[in-house]
Length: 408
Image (cartoon, rainbow, N blue to C red; front, side, top):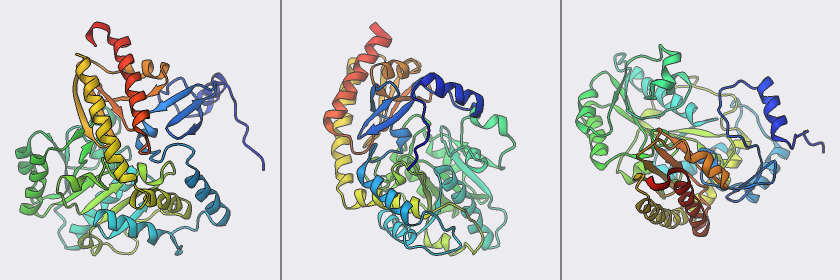
């Protein structure tokens, strides 16, 4: 079997991309070529401890033998049919997601942003089916991030992402997650849905407070507005429960998921309550690739590990260990202002810009990233061990000392 020609030199890879790949990413000066467990290796053979997992995607780590075998087997049988035909795997994945979430139906997508798009569309369709054409607005949160397509971008707060592409879809009102009263004032008879991440990821690993979750419940009860829980980053076991909305006692009408679901293979879904599903008709939404056999096979490998393989219990144990170690680290460094998160989703908030931390960590063999300017975001593979957590936090400890000196 022929193998693709792969350059082993970073400079050649960069030169080829510079000529032919659209320049929308500021990449770290590293070319990663293989992985094993929670470690990645570059073209020079340098080993990196991965505390980011491709931004929460590689949930089972790298080179997972069960995932590799399942995808190879499925690719040899049948990869894709389109949604014009049945295949045996979509229903299996949807049934598992229903058991975990309590929402009985799923619409499969290729990514998280597409899942958000689907939720936004289904929320409007819900009201249209009832003959109510005035409920077309959304209420979203400051620091919220829905994605980069036009609908999901419209409910993304940061104007840095939004400004070059305006006008976006109309009438999105943003409120602070620190102000439950503002949410209650913003939701009215024109609101189709509230969309909120139970833990904001790109916005700086910001968990919703119980008081704000209660305001969501009150606003929906008072006005009939739907609630969309954007669990693309926080869901599917990342915080130690199947979905973080469950921790907050929320009952969403729609849930967007992605990232962890395929353990590295691109797949997402919109999860839908029965009352919303009953308002959706044939042809209302569609996708060519969504929920194909390869995507569903990858999702089944992950969901079996989560649901039956003890992964949730492991995340709870490893997450408690991670939190304790991170808080101890923060206590040693005056530059650390806060620790936020749950399970294996953490942000170390600094009192200064965190940008220098990322390259310094990379130089020491640790992969983290910066978000919301002052936050070091950590989303390790969910299979990470306590010893690997300790190793990563020891490296981060050294990095903070290197970068900030007496401030640290």
